[in-house]
Length: 115
Length: 113
Image (cartoon, rainbow over all chains, first blue to last red; front, side, top):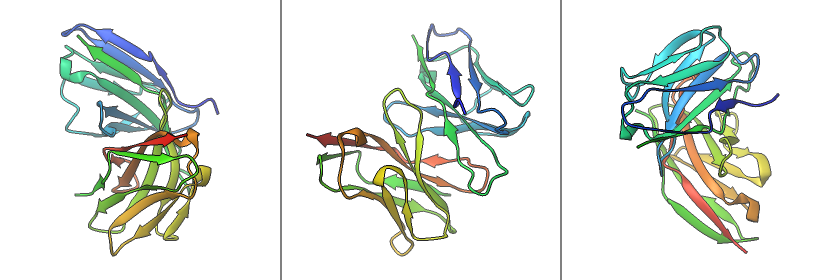
């Protein structure tokens, strides 16, 4: 169990640029989640995948955001035409839904700063 | 709609004294409730989870929480604070089995030597 890995740890970009983050879940975890955490707040749910299927998206996920999990393993979160309001910590989590005591394992996050 | 309210944004205690972090929840039915801890530059870690099996839930690192339906509370306690407990703590509710977690705004715990 190597944990949930996120890359990059930090990303600084200029307003209007596109950015892409990657999340590698714990192997064999079939569920993968994206959350966003702004300064001084708790994380907010963005979207989640069951294997490669994206089953739910929050209203926070505007049309500029897209997430994929093409082979049911790693996932990417892309933000197009970034805005200053997108500055936040983006957290990925994974879980295995076939155990009685399911729990989420979180990565350390990608800190995005939009200048 | 389900939500949680963490009543204190900051709590400061002396090392060796008890810790109490307060959380109230709002739910139309019996929820799943959690406490997570976030240390700087580390991922969120699950401390404990309530799913109706027992009202007093024991977690890791000596923490425990009691579910009180009459008070709609799920406060986190620890008998004796350690310096390593200094972190951000989140009370969390899950509306269903999808683990679309709803986080509170967090309580920052400071532990004084």
